[in-house]
Image (cartoon, rainbow, N blue to C red; front, side, top):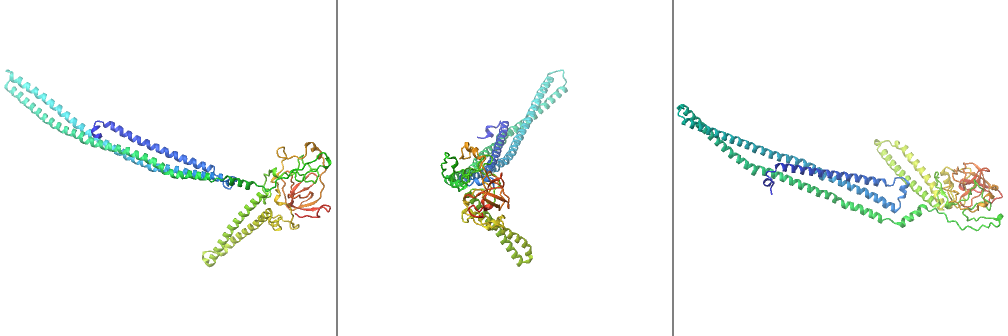
Length: 556
């Protein structure tokens, strides 16, 4: 099967067919290019998607990813990022192994095709020239033959005419001979050219054209093989990344299998455990004896007034419902006293750990500077040892500050954990709130149950959150109740911003009246004047009770 023998007369159709083959190859290249663009776009979208759902650093969201389900989600995002990388590999390999290779090949193919068809046209032009020469020789031979016949007929006519002179007859005879000779020469020339043309035509149809068409056939077959190889490469590029993609998917499955619901439940307990004890039973209040009404000490709405009705502020009770009230959204105190005991302990421990890491970092830096100074002392040409003294002093000062800060937080931590009954004198001095004129003494208040100094838990008396003890029919009974009498005075050791309902702001050094002492929850009720009263942390004031009260003087 050869194009040279089977398609010897289909030069134009072969030219069109080979051009179509090149167009198909260019179309396939375009297809692969668009596939690579899709892969790149897909990889970019996957990476953006993975980045979009990654937790932001140093944010609350990052803290939430301690749960195993969230960690599995992070692992899924990371695997998807690697998954996207494999699609980038597909795009890169297809571009280099297919698009680039075919682009170079198609240029070579076009050049080869152009050369082959140029040789074919040249052979066509040569055979056409030979054919024209043959036709010209043939016409000349035909013309000379006709001229010779006419000359012979004229001679015969002249020879038969008795009136014609002998000279005219001889002249006609010579002219006939000349024409006959010319016809013989044309015949010989025509015969020679015909033989030459037949030889050239035989060479053209049996040698030149078959060879040229055979080259074109081989060129076309190589193009077909090339596009087939490219298609195999197309599949292999995808196949090569399948194992890695499989590992990515296995990673996602492994991350999903690592989810531990029990561990997550325990983390929820650690995150939100307050450390408070559930409230006790509420005692029955007998309203059949109006003047002997009592409120249980275990009641959630304990008025803390030792049997006296609670003083109203805007018609709202000041009873503390710690387990049910909302958190303060204001600034967080340095000692985290706005948090429940368990959460406060965790925060303080975390702060101590951070400070210890900073101390270790500064100590490493101090050691490095000290070593450098020793090198300078031994080799003065390397540097001036005195130039490091200032830096060394700064680092030492920083270490000392961090140690004092650590001791302060460790004292608070010890207080929460029950190792210390109250904050020590040293801890107060480190906090910068120590009053040298009134050294504090130990108070056995229940700090582990103490709520926030600035009220992480506030009382929002509404129908949804308030546990009402008194019936609405008796509300008006206490609106005109006389204020509680003062049982002593107190001096503010520190400034306290009472931003929550039921608390009162005090300034360091300010003297106020005590109307209700600490009942063990860490709060003391005080009054500034007839209209301003509320609770402050007991540890923020120094209390002086009247002689008639229990204990002449108490330090907090």
